Length: 612
Image (tube, rainbow, N blue to C red):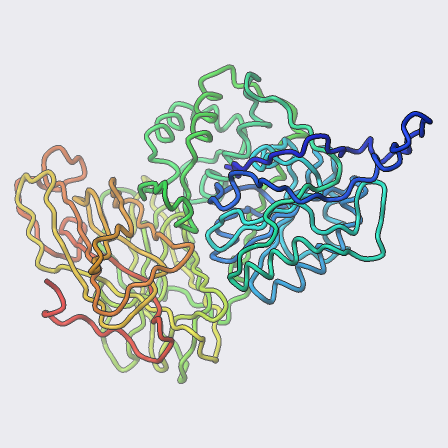
């Protein structure tokens, strides 16, 4: 999906590639020379979309890597810069953008570049990025979908988004280059000033300018027939092939149009009922960018995919399709500092049910280590439901774990890495080993798994220690036959903390889940999962951390369906209590957090008086 922001075009603005050509002055038009010299102009009445959140978009960069604006931003300001390898003004502004990127990267501002001319060549874009040293991803917009979402008018436009992905500025980089002129240096540095003011929490003095460049003419797409390459391929690439590919965790690939058509009936069903892609948080119209890892299709993407599958399934021109997505065999987090593997090769039976498995992994470190990133890689991902990794004292004989305790790493299909960012890390205590809890789900073929875990570690403590706490109610009692039974767990926060992620956890009778923040001013919903699915143990990672002040409460509510109407229910005739196995039940609301005051300390496991 792409941004939906619109620009009020200044009347009479002469922009376009043709304007760069010499004009023949005529005696009765003494201002003809001036007419072809076009500089940026401040827009007196900025677009109504200035100051409003923009919509996330996904693509594949010129290196073949998946790009997701929300994940890329991760709570940082972002500059989206249009560019082109063939537009003369874009070429001139390339070094300027490289200098701005270098200046502001150190201050937490990220850049992304969109090549705005459909016929620009991939190899040329790769060479430009290499020559200029752009650090941010470069995207080719061959079918102009991203430009349409931006309502782009010129190849030199830039868009500045704040930490909430709210549009704060759009327009020119500066006034050094324009149509028909070049200055020795810029006199008005619009983008630089906007970034400085944004970082200083000041009101932007200029919210919008015009941007002389090669004019962008977007086609009218309202009535055109859908084509796979132009309309569908990016949706599948952005939302499906991460799992549905050779070697992926999904049961069949969707990497080609033939594969998509072969599974059309299934795809239409699961996309239509929102089972796929797996994402179960209720949408929030007031806070559309709450989640970094939101995997849901937009309504438009869903409609386009279903409509194409139900139509004549025209393929279209492959030259307008996306850059092929590359899935590297190397670790996503980079070369691990510490790489370990389960001590045993686990045989997964072909059918039936398997209890949770716990295996201990011996370590040798004698000083505290700090986990900056972690990745879990099953060798048979098609049968791994989830993995949780815990640290236990080396002197302990413990193998089983308490699910309510602080876990170091988590794996679920489609989500096998956690990276905590600069200044954040989890602690791997000295003289501790690991215990991995693995849940295997047989899929009709006996296989062997020996899951590997990679850690990127540091010896230096971070500014913020990332922790995990499980808000649990071990006294749950779900009556036999109850189809909508609620249970509640609460935590009164003993020390102000910022929440960075939520992990709901129930078993087969889990129906819905909710996190709420109770304060003196009232109750605020933190996460609502109206259709909980045990098959997908998802994390919900916030774009911007949520502060919970000391003394206020986090309330976790889970609804359970223990009726015969729940096809996953092992036995609707029996009441259900807390238990480790999936035929029993749990209510745990995990929160990942760090302390607001940055001092050393930790949330101890809540006493009975803390839970009401």
